[in-house]
Amino acid sequence: MTSNSASSVTKSGEPVSLPAALASFTALWSPRIVTTVNDYDVRVAKVEGEHVWHVHDRTDEFFLVLEGELHIALREPDGERTVVLPKGSAFTVPRGTEHKPYAPVRTEILLLEPTGTLSVGDHHDDIPVHVDATTGHALA
Ligand code: NI
Image 1: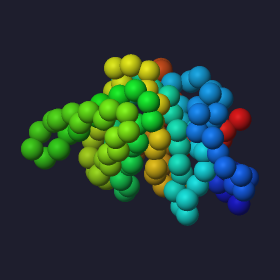
Image 2 (image 1 turned 135 degrees about the vertical axis):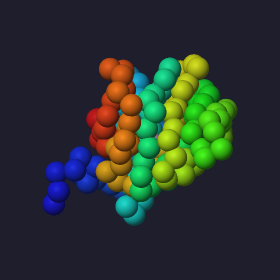
Image 3 (image 1 turned 30 degrees about the vertical axis):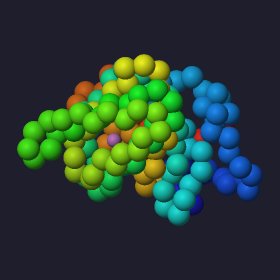
Image 4 (image 1 turned 120 degrees about the horizontal axis):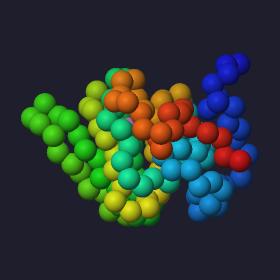
């Protein structure tokens, strides 16, 4: 056994209600793990305002917008651009690509990434106080 918080997530054998999961916490930029798929976490988060520039060296990161609108600024070889994800849109940030999520309004997202992935990546700018640097929290 490891002490990694994500490894302690227990599958209940019952369906998980995403609205109920999202209603169970209020913290912004603080993902909750709703289930796991092989070596991956399915996480949900409430977000608003800016996250932080960061990069995941070894993994892609999948985003699905459940409510609201998510913008993701990307630093690519050809320069910087921002993708806009309205409700219902999905996007994968490739491994090694510096990115900064931003939500102009209160937004709910679903994330898919390997268990243990840190929300602020392997390298990051100074972490603002409103951003939780975490590998994901268990649902209460
Ligand atoms: Ni990321």
